[in-house]
Image 1: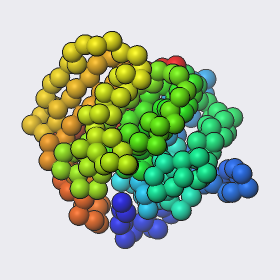
Image 2: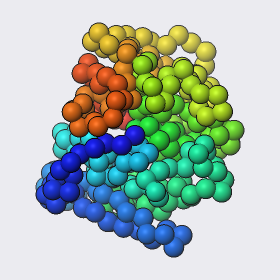
Image 3: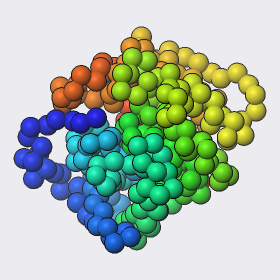
Image 4: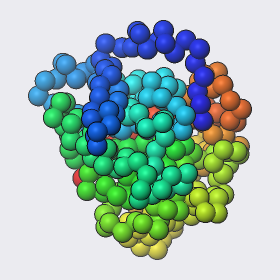
Length: 281
């Protein structure tokens, strides 16, 4: 998925004062990332802040992810730090399209980046989260599988559980998992893809089982006219009726590809943060 913003260069030159482009050398590769600190960060020098990793989709850049999702606004409202890492060749290793074990070590990079951020910023280590769109969403679920000791919860938008992660997922841990997916997504199918990824519903069931939830009835409710919310214990699924491969609540005019409808029933940033705020390590 590629977000086409003709004025991207101009916008990047005028990024908010608290957004900083930084780099980290990991396995002899220079990796870049963008950090946004909320306006309250400088005003509260004794406070440790929650941290949210926001991973871009395939073909996107860290700046495009920041501009498209507009998560910085939520960071200001709810007082958390956001980091937008950049994948090698603008991609993430989720096990298909790249070797799970021999491809890019994005899990190791994420660990190293988190360690660096804890050194450079006042991070609340008990409240570290990951989210992402498309490949970034897939990768957030890989993080939940492989780094449960570091991340309290993840939220994937348009990216259910990759089958290679299921096959290799052996590390015990309990992580909050939120899935947001449109039923009319033509890029990543809501119903899954054999050999690639589970359906949204099967992903929900997988994490309930993986987190050790007892058999029970999930609570369900409608959010507006387009979104159905299902939740049990620390796993939730927001199904967007006729929704496309988009970030709910985002500006659809920023999108340059025919990736479907963007619902206005929910603001993904608010929904994600409300979910994250209930989880800590």
